[in-house]
Image 1 (cartoon, rainbow, N blue to C red):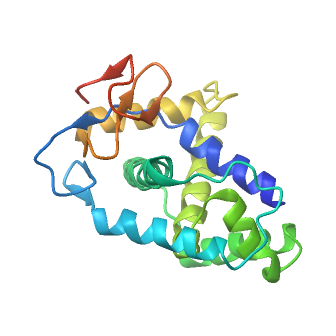
Image 2: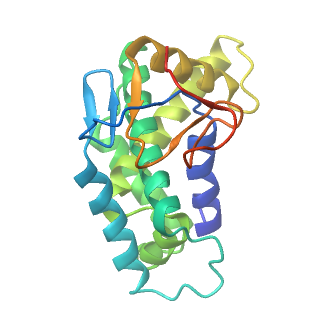
Image 3: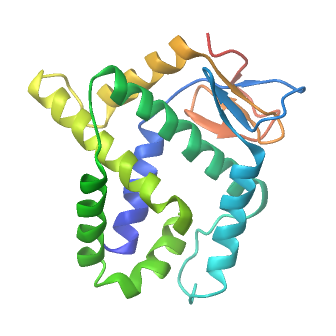
Length: 204
């Protein structure tokens, strides 16, 4: 998988997983998913790692690198959606082993031309090296969910079956986002800046 393909895969996972996030001005966490939380520190560390790793590779030709609030929203989105996908996997008795992740990691190395090309590929995809295994786990879960949908003859051409599962999970658990990162736009299924039209106010 070339860096551009990796980036598309990451975007596909995020875009295929719609959920509704609420804002709460008194929140101390970045987001809450049921009883689980995404801490501000987790998001900040991920962002700091990405920015640091950009200084270590050539970013020439990488025209879509996020910065500032956009980068923070992107990383929060990743953590929220990966948690929800974990919960969907548990519900459907899908397990991802360390061996599965190791095999996927090896496959990525092969597809990008070797481990030496990984830093540049991750920078281009907007993935912190510290989140790489988490990214691989998320990809593996979506692949297994896709296989389940196919076996059940459930339409999933554009990831709609997986999206429906994540939406259902989000409604069941309740998801809240700290407004310092933005709000949820139900029309585009995205975390957007505050005061953006068409944003939802409740996950229920």
